[in-house]
Length: 249
Length: 319
Image 1 (cartoon, each protein chain N blue to C red):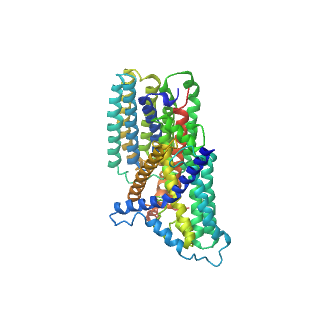
Image 2 (cartoon, each protein chain N blue to C red):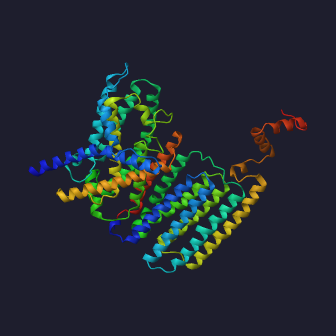
Image 3 (cartoon, rainbow over the protein chains, first blue to last red):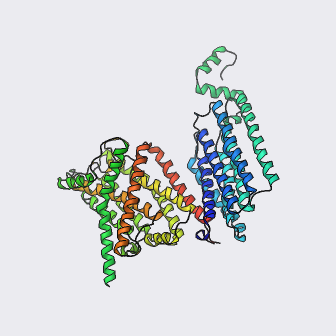
């Protein structure tokens, strides 16, 4: 069955699926946190559009409930909360230097090929048209993981985690016409609780290491911190040496 | 036999139209840009006047210039005209576009660019060498992205011949293809980079340290300069026609009757005018980016092309 023979709704769903994949790539290459959160909200919005179209064209009215849930949680509430925290912690001016950006992008593209390769046998055996988008949803999950690996800011990790959940929701829509309502509600509340918990967690990381840069968690010694501080600002070293209780070897 | 002759005549007329109308597109672009920036615009036919003025002037050639320097404008211009024969402007299924496919067209562009870069190096000035090296850097990144975008089209139509592929798209009617959306954006990004428009290069300034295209042709004057400028206007129009006719081919003439051809001409004029307006708008809104960020920009274009191809394979595959 070629795409020309499908009806307009199915073509639109497949196109939106492709755009959901694109937003995952955009998140991967985004160094600014506020823009990252905006793209995340955009992905959620595309997802709700896809789900709404699927609910309409496949006449699955119970999907509308998950549409409303996704819209409320992933397009409005979670991005709003993340944005508020970023603004409150004064992180919105930081631009994260993404090293190996091109390499990460190509890695993401190969993840997409990989998920296609893995799911090809499954897709071949079924006749449901929407199942074509299953590979995209798996790659959204994998790209969310790659986002968590490649970014250093804790907020970016949370966005990556939430986009993994987006991928799972998407695969549930395309593969099974939506999960059972109980599971759906459970997952939604899990995500909500996770978002709140992450907010508290941010505060803790920030009070203990004075930054949300996760790379700083590798340094265990206070000495390391002190050295790093001195590299940035040599007057601290002078102060330490002149205070006299530690002698530089 | 008579039919065959008629087709060839039409093909020649189409190429002549291409060459003749390309300064008009450049003039239209300049007009739109001036209006958007609250300036008084030059006449729509100013590029023609410029070309005539340059042709009348005596070309000045540096003493140490080799034969390569004087012959390059002719090679560049004719290679670009040959590329224009491949692209369907008003009608599909013309004999010239049947004889060569889209990869040949990219090859013609590469050929012209090679000679342009050599000519920039030939005099041995600092600006020429700098411009050539930048042009080659950008094109080495832009070409894969462009081929990716074009392969998406050719995979859908299962042919690399442009006019057959465009015919295929017309016959399918309005189909929402995710791969085409990606390919369209990739091709737009590549076209902006390859024709040296604003976010990548600024066509309006000379003697700026960041210039690319103008740096290579700084030593040219007179009819040589006229030919090179004409070739770059032609290249801009070629990219515009590619974008318009591949992704929005409706209106293109499929039979060689007078009304169909006239309608085709009208359609392509409207589409190009709209594209020119959009380009002028984007040039007004965007600032030129740093040279070192061009690779990110073209990397994004490549990614879009790749995603287009992947979504063709993943989402549109026949089962």
